[in-house]
Image (tube, helix red, strand yellow):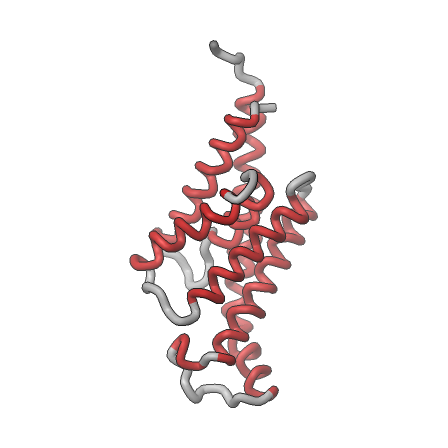
Length: 180
């Protein structure tokens, strides 16, 4: 097993690389951000797990559409992903646990961000699109289902990929002789 310093550097590098991957052209809502937040929660110690994904988002947002009134809800949902990674994947990251965490992260992101779209219509340019009653909230979630499907697919693929790459690299480093 790599030492704590190597493991931390590897985790930070993989997280930064995967979040920066959002700058590469991609299908709508299919990005590595949710998966990297889960990974950060599981593998990066302390407060840095919460700071790193948000810092990279703050830096890259101007290049992918900028900040909106909804950015706070989006960032909050990503912080919840870090917390999910910490709770479900910190001690043990099996395929089932990784898949479950990716599903839960994607689901809570869908619920939180679409609630914001309904509650603050001007936040995303949807003023007057949905009524302010329960029917409007349900319509908001119904209209967003196709987007959630893409988010879920991206979260499952990227989360699995990030954890698999980390496991392979950690195993490779563990088999290398230590240098002075």
